[in-house]
Length: 310
Length: 316
Image (cartoon, rainbow over the protein chains, first blue to last red):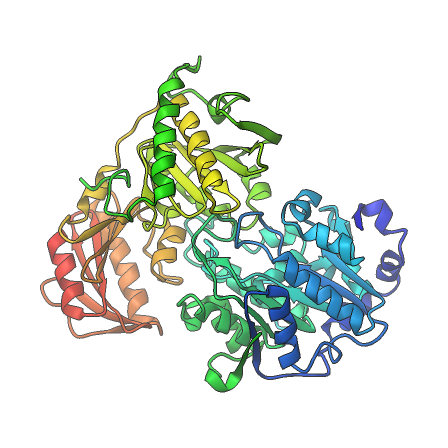
C-alpha cells in the first residue's frame, strides 16, 4: 500500500506527536546496536537473488536477532533510478519483507522521500503491494525531518532524518552497491542519505564544489558523519548486478557477481563490495574515514568473509 | 587527431547489431524533415520524434524537462558531473512498441560542443560498438550514447534483446536526423600520442570530478585546469594531459599539486626529478610521472616506472 504523507498528514500521526513530545528520543530505537553483532561479512551467491539474500542472512544467524517479535521494521531500498543495475532488486526486497514477517514483525514499511513514480518504475512498489508491506512516501518538507545531533560530527554537526523513522523499532538498510560519479562508490554508508532530508543532503557539497578540491572529501566526511547518527540494525546490499560506470543514475557498464552481502559492520560490508569491481577500499574516502573514525573495520581478509552458494 | 569514438577499434558488431544498423540507415534515409529553428538555436524539444516518426514506436508517458539546477531533481546524487561539464537542459521521453518493449530517450543540451563531447566520452565505456550516429556514438549492451553539436543523446533499453536494441537505434536515428549542429572534437584531444592509443579510452575532462573518476587524486590542489584529456595505451600505460591556459597558471598549479603529492599518504616520491620529470608511486603500486610542457601538465601512469616516464616523453 502506498501512502504519500505531507506535513499536515504527518502531524496527525503518533509519530508526529512523538516528535513534538519526545525530541530526546533521537533515533535511539533504530540506533540501538543489534543483539547479534556478527563481526564478519556474509555473502549469499546465486542466480536466485531472493534466495541469495536469505542465505546471506542465514550466515549471520538468521533474521530473528535483528527483528524481534512484534517489531515495526523500516526498510531502505535504493530507488534512485530505473536503469538496470542502479536500484535494489525487487526480489531481494521481497525476500527481506518475508523474513521480517516470518520473524514476527507487526509492520514492515519502506520509507522514502523519492517519488511514487520511482517506486513504480523500479518494480519495488509492486513487490511491496504483493507482500502486504507499507510504502510511506514523504514530501520534501523540512518539517517532516527531525534534527539529530551527530556525535563526533566533523563536516556534519546535525543530520535531518525522516521523523517517521522514530516510529519504528528496527532499520534495515538495503542499498545496491554501484559506481558514483561524485565519490566513486556507493554502498551501505551512502544509502543513508535516502533518509536524510534533501535540503541537508545538498549541504554535503560545498557551494564552490566545482573548484574546491576538498569537496569530495567533504561529501565523504558528511556521509561518515551521517552514519554516526543513524545506525541500521542490519545492512543487506544488492551486489547481484550493478553499474560500475556512470553511477549512481546510469546507464552504465553492468557487472553481475550474483551476490547479496549482509552485515552489521558498514565499513566492512562496503569494503567488500568495493573490492567486487577492483576498487581498493582505502582509495574510497568514505570507507577509509569510516574505519579511521570507528564505524567499522577494513581489511579483515578472508577470515572476515563467509560466502555460501545457493 | 584522435576521433570522437565514431570509428575506433572497439568490439565487432554482433549479428543483431548488424541487422539493427541496416534498419538505422534505412530509417535515416526516410527521415528528411527539417526543424524550423536556426542551427545553433534549437532546444532538445525540437529533436523529439513524434508518434509515427519511428515505425512501430510510440511515445509513452509524459515528457519531462529539467533545466539548470533542476537536474538535481532528475539525477539525484549524480547531477554534479553534468554540471561540471556545463549543463543547460535535458528532455526525457519514453517510447514503447507493440511488444511492450520500452526505450528511454534523454537529450542533454550542454553549454558547448566540447562539453557534449566531454560528457559523451565520460559516459561511454570504450568497449561497446561504434555506430554511425552523430559525431561519435557507442552502443553498449543495453544503451547508446552519441554526441552532436552541443547535444548528448542517451537511449536506454531495459533488456539486451534484439527488439530493444532495434528500438534504441531507430529512435536514436530519428533524433540524429533532426539535429543539424556539427562540431569537431576539441583540439586538446590531439595531445595524446597516437601510437598505441586505444581511441575508445579517450576521456575529455572539464574538472576534478571527472578526473578523480579515472585516477584518484583525492583532495589534491592544483587541479583547476581549463580542460584535460586522458587516453589508455596498449602497453598498459595511461596518459593525462591537463591544460591550464598559460604556462604561468600551470606552474602555480604544479607547485600546489607537487606539494600535495609530497605530503600525501597515498603517494610516495620515487627518486629525484630527472629531465624535468618527477616520479611518484601511488597507493596501488603504480608509478605516476609528472612533467610540464608550456601550458600543459602531463601525467604518465603505469605499473612500470620507465613506461610512465616514456609516455610523458612522447607527449612533450
